[in-house]
Length: 271
Image (cartoon, rainbow, N blue to C red; front, side):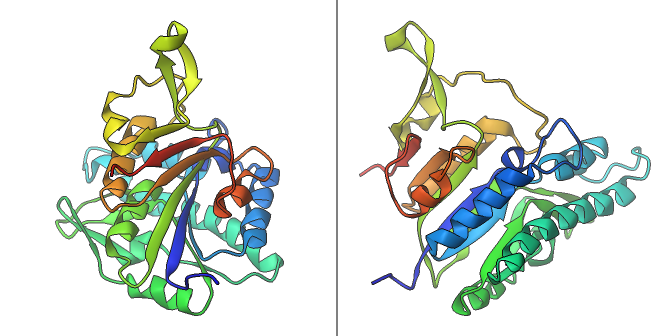
């Protein structure tokens, strides 16, 4: 019997679903495969996806993550353009679920989160809980976030996950899954003369000491792998294990949702 209050947070990386080097491009076969695996797994999930080639180029062009800057021409227009671009990407994914007769609901992060200087408030988290109670798959995504102080920024998919871990009181998050284009976190291993190896398992208190391998960074206004590790450390403070998996490998999303063994990075909670 499934525990009705257990939930998995699944992040589909923007770099996985899109080609970040080609603005507004979708890797359709990857997206369709991910959607089908989520449907087949039939687990209680909140899905979060990144911005990829829809969010990052515009956000970078208008320096959205750095806030209001009157010297940037058309920045406010760029803010709304970035939001609309993410809506378009999200609508594509929503439609993939609806075409399969699977109930999925888009929830705009910019409508349920607001900043007050550095603090994020979650006024409307009840919407997510209400959707889950109806067995609807809530789908959130990296978005703009407005600030009560008269500015704005970006709320990344990783930040959204952290906010959900902290504020989803009715539901207990059993694990967080990050899907990537690689098998997980790669390190320069001193036991193999500095060769790059996959960190298959590590404790959350070891994250700061990892000697990360440089696999090349794409355009990313939300922090890249180091930024992700910072969020993961905070997620682990809520006693939630984290998996980083390769979303390009056949069946890996399904297997992770079903807690089957796969070649990936598992970040465990310190006992």
